[in-house]
Amino acid sequence: MTDSQFGNGKILAESLKQEMNQKYEIEIADVKDAAPETIAEGFPDVLILGGAIRMFRGDPKSRKWLKKFASLSENSEKKIKYGTGFLTHALATDKVQGFARRYLNKIKKSTIIESVYPELLTARVQSQEGPIFPEEMEKAKIFAQNFLKWIEKQ
Image 1 (cartoon, one colour):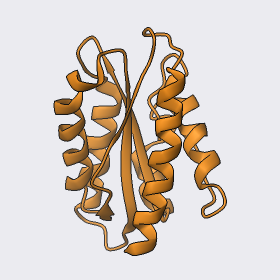
Image 2 (cartoon, helix red, strand yellow; image 1 turned 180 degrees about the vertical axis):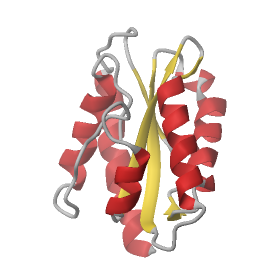
Image 3 (cartoon, helix red, strand yellow; image 1 turned 135 degrees about the vertical axis):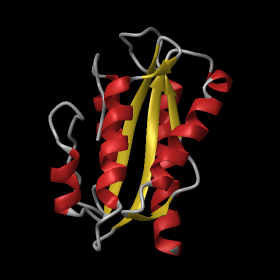
Image 4 (cartoon, one colour; image 1 turned 90 degrees about the vertical axis):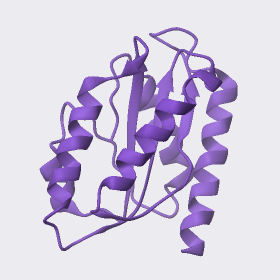
């Protein structure tokens, strides 16, 4: 799931897809287009929730989507096996760590996800419209590889 106003989240999701496509069938959807109910009913094995920090706060669309998704999970007997998330931002990486922890905690509160990877990917963009810094794209590849290794150990 992405929240991509300028396409940065989608680009990051495509990068993760490239790294993970050999192990999983990957579908990318935007929070504007895919209702939480649709995702919850599909019960994918893995769910990666992307968001963005805009104007020094999390984008309301992804926060609202995640809140609704979490409420759906309270009554669900089926579970998504693994989950994690990512954030795009234009701030210095050390400035987003508090928000990243809160975002990851929101994912963890979604009881429909059995196991949540203990790290969240943050990817810095050069400006609000992008592009994502090249070193951040490399970081995304390593994140995806480490996430897959973590899944294998579960």
